[in-house]
Length: 137
Image (cartoon, rainbow, N blue to C red):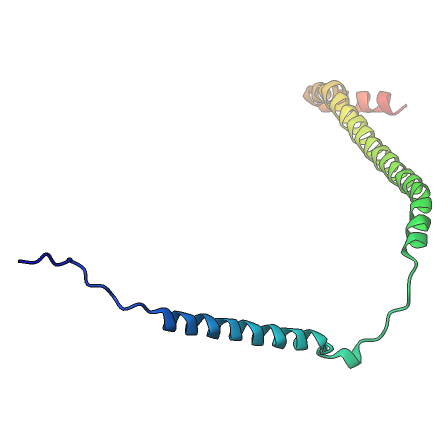
């Protein structure tokens, strides 16, 4: 019994491989030509006729002028902020002191004079009139 190989020899596919490579090369060449022609065509922008040319601006001069004015602007703005802070705090202090002095005077009146008035009200009517006349003098 002769020994047979387990795998059969496959036919060499040299020609289909060569044809496939040639087709790939042709497609690459055609795409290369198409892309070169595409780059040569001027690009159009949608609405390009509506775009107006902007005047040329010398950005360096603008930046220099802004940077020269910046310290002056910062100083004036900080002065304004400081004045606003001082004004606001002085207004707050004035209102607080006036309210506190009013509260203290009311508390003193209630604690000192209020008790005297209570004692006067406990007196009989003729004596209350005498005390009122003495106080009003």
